[in-house]
Image (cartoon, rainbow, N blue to C red; front, side, top):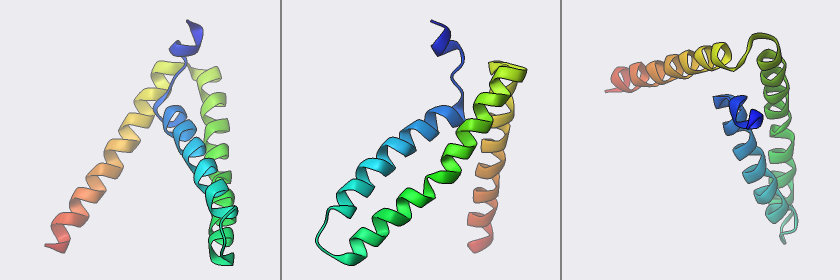
Length: 92
């Protein structure tokens, strides 16, 4: 029960991206071409910032609590969505 209380937006998205990235990287690395292998290694290196975000997320949840961290993460996500909308409108 306590595990579901401590879930945050970035934690869920991070775990999903890590699982998908590792599976896709393994498929690419075991492929036939060198370009695919390099792309798999590049994807694995791209997961390092995700691990860092997960570590920071867990430290913030431990210090401030789940609800406060979720508020900040949702506001950050809404700000990013707002920037995408402004970019879409500006490109019209």
